Image (cartoon, rainbow, N blue to C red; front, side):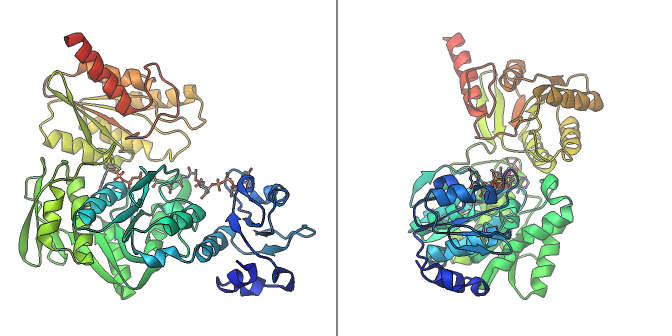
Length: 489
Ligand SMILES: CC(=O)N[C@H]1[C@@H](OP(=O)(O)OP(=O)(O)OC[C@H]2O[C@@H](n3ccc(=O)[nH]c3=O)[C@H](O)[C@@H]2O)O[C@H](CO)[C@@H](O)[C@@H]1O[C@H](C)C(=O)N[C@@H](C)C(=O)N[C@H](CCC(=O)O)C(=O)O
Ligand SMILES: Nc1ncnc2c1ncn2[C@@H]1O[C@H](COP(=O)(O)OP(=O)(O)OP(=O)(O)O)[C@@H](O)[C@H]1O
């Protein structure tokens, strides 16, 4: 593909020059080590490394031209200097792969919590109604029914466009992270429907203030197609604020909330502790039977339902679909404990998510709650006070343990855990640094009616090694269940 034409058609006309006229591009890369003969190499100024330092490597591997942000001369191949390499990369990739997002119904889901859950629910109910769906998110990506590992919640623009080009699916459901929006991974994509679940304290190491975080999240809605629609949960002030903003911009908004102004109204009196709930749509009461518990999952299901309705699926069919929802890996994943206790693995890693999960356990009848969690290294430290406060208030015993260290010294993290245990002042609280032993302790303590909640990792594999031969919280539970079975037989 002619580089000159690609530049002209992606708003880069100002950068065209005679020397580019003959350049034919066979592929695009932002990683020098993957660059092949005839490729365009785009140098990204990263957080760890600077792609400009790898330009010579890319040329040595056959790059036919280079794009970057620095003022560089004397390269042996044509060089185009742009304002923002990530932005240019995304737009050029969309062009190179022939704007694949335009060939699907595109649904983007943003918000602090509930993106993965809502996307899994949505995929299930849409497939039940006969649509094929691609899925992009934290757990994995699914294209044409085939599952691919996911490195980021929102893949980088190049991978995203490549995968979109592969997809023959009718609908693409995509989790849209604030990092993805801030890093321009989604440029060149337009959405038919955008969802906003909620906003809570998270990622303030990256976005600095909650207001800045909100500003980035709402960028999804500037990517709606002409006539595109927004679906917003107004259960928090940020959902209300976003609704006002989009109304001012004359974007069509449907809301899920608690008041008569909302399109789907949640009847908060309905029985939320197990899995049945009621909502009202256009004056009609609808009764849902869910397969997973929790008020947060009622919110997620309602958002997925509203989306299904916007696509034009009958209400009864959608409600029916929820009855066979198989759940989500690592999200309120429940296990039976041999002592008639219940054990749960959940991905909660914000104070807000803690409170929803712990309340669900209490509402489901937990006599005693033992909560095992840690703080992730090299991630927002400012949320730790609130996480500890919620755990202390809502549980009978908190066992502080390690989560991924991400390069942080283990002893420093243990000292941090000590600080939080002292501040909580609860005699029952413990620190057991080895995550597998912490889970085992909770397991061994459990009596009839108790609930053990292990949060933070969900279905992710451990990045560090622990005492028990296990690679994830799921495997640790499997080992403990196995150990009980072996002792019993
Ligand atoms: C902090 C952050 O967001 N980093 C993201 C960023 O990487 P980076 O800019 O740090 O990359 P870098 O390592 O400095 O490299 C810079 C450039 O040099 C190039 N390079 C490097 C080495 C070499 O030999 N040759 C070469 O060309 C690299 O290919 C790259 O283009 O751009 C990459 C490509 O898009 C992302 O994969 C990467 O996500 C990292 C892995 C990450 O962990 N990000 C997290 C914080 C994140 O994005 N999370 C959100 C979800 C958050 C949530 O809601 O929970 C997500 O969407 O996943
Ligand atoms: N609607 C919700 N409101 C508040 N908390 C929720 C909601 N849905 C899920 N949670 C909690 O947040 C955790 C993460 O949920 P989920 O994976 O669906 O969200 P996410 O937005 O994809 O998260 P991440 O961006 O961290 O991958 C769940 O395990 C649960 O504890």
